[in-house]
View 1 (cartoon, rainbow, N blue to C red):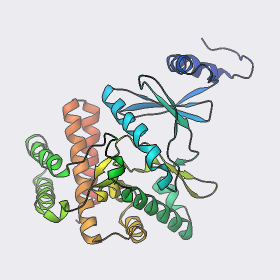
View 2 (cartoon, rainbow, N blue to C red):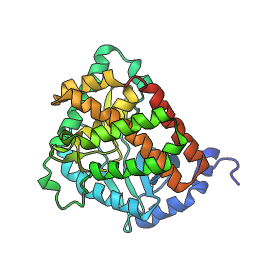
View 3 (cartoon, helix red, strand yellow):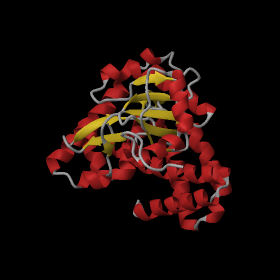
View 4 (cartoon, rainbow, N blue to C red):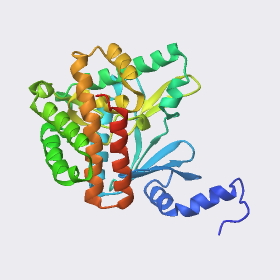
Length: 313
């Protein structure tokens, strides 16, 4: 039971230390010279739990064996690409022997939300757009040959989406309206039948470039860094624009593409409408596989929201 104070520890701090003692013990056992004086849970996703340790370090604990393979890729790739990027990325100082966790110096910043972005002045918005575009250009331009021995997978979007389309027809179509079925069928068919969607040369891609992984420095009004490279792979560079399009809208994307100096913007935007829908379909299929009622409800709600948002497409 946590009562009173002990030295400079507050009641809450003692409670946190006791609550997460398992994680503290693991860190102290592997790195006895590193004294854990505070620990606070700052996030948990499908793959990992994240803790803020000593106010200055982020420690990530994979929740499954397959996630450890993602961490292994990060450990291999990030040191190689760091010098080619202008923005900060995680620098693992602590790597446990069995990859039970990794730890790195915290990159100071908050998640860049659309609300934060919309509150900025136009010149500040353009500065952020330019920074994000330059980061993606630097990432996508990195030599694929230099990373051949890093265990990176090459994304096969054709096979993945062809399979998802068949599963959607079997498992989802009976639950949605005829109009929605027709839109899904049209977008999947158009994407899969257009050879131009698959003529790209695979590049290095973040593969999960969402707002949650873009850290914003509210003091200096700049991007502080990019985190969570667990899904990093070789693939279609256009895929890295998906979540920017989803979360910030087409106007934001157009500015990014100006700075990025992309090729056929019309084709890219068309692909992103499809990627956005396909992502929602994939989430529904995953929720059906897990068979969690809350997950299914949320997944169908997100799919409905896509149709409301892009009803004119």
